[in-house]
Image 1 (cartoon, chains in turn brown, cyan):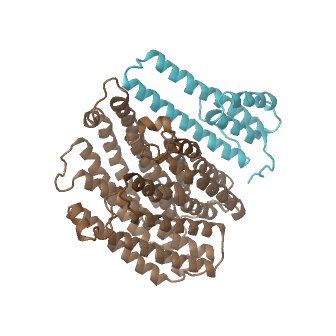
Image 2: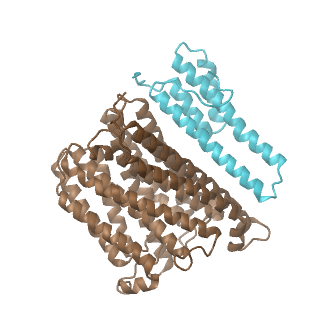
Image 3: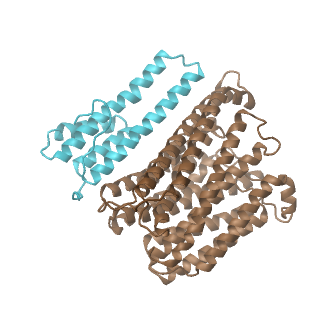
Length: 458
Length: 125
């Protein structure tokens, strides 16, 4: 690596992978609970498994983003990180707070946890994805602000590039929009309205900036294409992401009690949301086609291309599938949403973090690329996880279509649980493909321990 | 590395029209692609010839896969059964997404000044 302080990225990446493993384990537990309702009950009730699954996702992605930023920013700014010690201190604070929170979910009844952690002082708990106790939320803000201070000082004193500025903008946006998790109005409509300012404006807004910057960084490194070309693409992609994504928030406002005009605004703007993902795919493949070098880390190239494709399919296509108000009238809150959520999170954010890890980890371990043998195992991991995710999405989509028909279209609509019984076959198939995904993840972890001669550029 | 064309070449235009036919203006974009195909199918420039012929043939196959096959499912299946709808929608969404993805890959190749080959039966080489 070019700068010693980039090494602080390593523990962040290791923690991210560990938490990713935990997320998948709880996903498997929950997947089984869909069909075997009392599995692990009362030790791990479904609502707790779900909370752990989704919270671990968010936390490992945040670890990944932070690690990636600590690696990327010094290299782009062409100077050492402002304070590596601060970055390491924040790592331990975040890890301990994250682990304590997950243990709290698992060991203490949620209502008791709320009482113990000051939810009566400022009520912020009980909302999907933002279930974290108040001290954890405060901890996230402290860690994020310390990181932003550290990274911003590095950029201010160093070279400013489109990539590090877009990444910083995305990270600042991440921190700012998280502040809405502290605003919890009693009015349920207002509550949901602002809740989406965290959830939607993260994943369909500022996170796309982070993703675009990370993808651009890796593509410059592995293709050798001129920075100017890649930066032009990046500008257009982030412009489209913000133009479509900000007002696209309206697709969450269709049925929550907000004015009817949101059905138009939401439909029109979110119909444009696939555009940045479409462009990212085109961008990634175009850059690889125009490459000036054969980088020895072919696994990183594969992860980068996979990010483009899977983000477009998961976030773009499966998002568009149910985003128009007349369609969403039938599909909202069904397994179609779950199908979209799984592939979009995997394609856009899990894969981009894994792309960064794949590119940077060999360098952090003192070589440009891993051995061919290790890369082959890593590529197997990519294909197993990606194909499994495609099938998970297809099975959930099938379950969703059937569920909608039975619950919302049939002449004599079924109740929710009766319809769930009818789609159990798809849940079983999803669970089996989940095991394939898990196998891929285990192989991915194994690939870090495979030794051999460093791969060279062909 | 092949030189990157400065203006929109017929090769790029052909791939764009293939995608527009799938995403924005089905039929209309196909007619424009047909005109382009007739004009450039025997072009002396191999890159133009390959992209124009490939994208036109792929559009025809895509039309079959997205219109004829769902039509057959709808005609032969009992549309009052939810299973048929599940099959129909799943097929259409997956097939359409796959065809769009092939178009993106082909467009990326055209933009980079490289030939492409759609992995579809009947595609003109």
